[in-house]
Amino acid sequence: MKIGIEGQRLFRKKKHGMDMVALELVRNLQEIDQQNEYFIFVKNDVNRCLEERPNFHIVVVPSAPYPIWEQFSLPIAVRKAGCQLLHCTSNTAPIFTSVPLIVTLHDIIFMESLSLLKKGFSAYQKFGNMYRRFVVPLVVKKSKQIITVSEFEKKRIGDFFHIKDEKLHAIYNGVSNHFKPIDNKEELERIKEKYKLPDKFFFFFGNTDPKKNTAGVLKALSLFLQSSDKKIPLVMLDFDRNELDKIVANIGDAELEHYIKLIGYVPNDELPAVYSLSTIFLYPSLRESFGIPMLEAMACGIPVITSNTSCMPEVGGTAALFIDPFKPEEIADAINKLLSDHKLCEKMIVAGFENARKFSWKTMAENVLHLYQDVENSKC
Image (cartoon, rainbow, N blue to C red; front, top):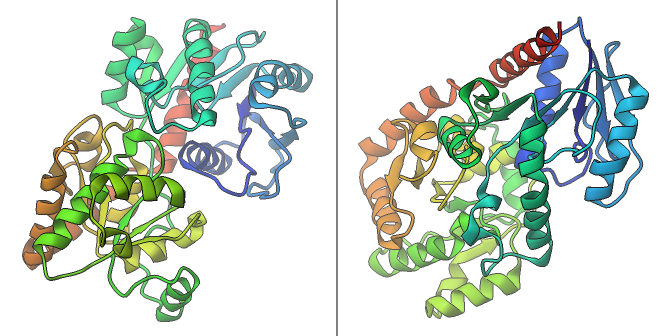
């Protein structure tokens, strides 16, 4: 069978969640499937992170704005390659394509009415939401099978679109093998110096998407600093300084910004060292469909504070401290609890290692491959 996989953003330098899921899918399919022939459709970006194999071909589709690339350029390339199946990996897909379609619908947050034009979204995010709101209902109807990433999200999607279980599948994401405790002192010092990291810090993946709960985390940090003599700062990834200033101003804590360090984008292969240098990983999102960073932190031996909402209890199991993300005081209390209770901290670390081992990219790829085969068999 000739299988096409949409991987438009696989070669871009700054990869994020869905990009990494697609990359791990292809990498693991390369290891487990030498029978089918694959065509990976990408843009010609700078970070060529996949090598061709005899049955895996990289097809560069000329760059264009995302909707044009997906709706026009991709179907043409799929037809030229002679694909018998197309798997689109990042929520959307061509509305018109002549081959059976599988789509990975990571979440339907963009379909939830309050999320579309909510304050805090950038213009780019708002356009992306509008595009998805138009395309996804059509794609859902057209798709032969739909993959999502948790039982929580499966139920949300099934209820929203009235999809029967036989068409909708929850296939868990995994944790990449390089996420493990880093004890090489030279590597830790290199990362610490590169990003000017403090000796002790909390780690948080903040961004401007309101679901990440950045305002709640910063309010919790303010409460923690006011209640504790342990003045531990917060390290945040790629976040806009102006947006940070606005949030801090709304909190009204003049000292707070002195305890926040922005370190920009960190490549995936350097994240394990940053996790390993941190004290606690904060992941109190208002809404997620899976939560890969939570598992990455666990795999690196870092205790996790996360939300008692959406998919987080499903993925976190018994290996995290769960809080109400709408209550910053609960986040602050959980931080104080972990810092003051060494036995609890060690218990969370051990449980985290065990929990992270349950999630495998190889298992994910095997489940997706079975779905490809099911779609092919259904045509017979």
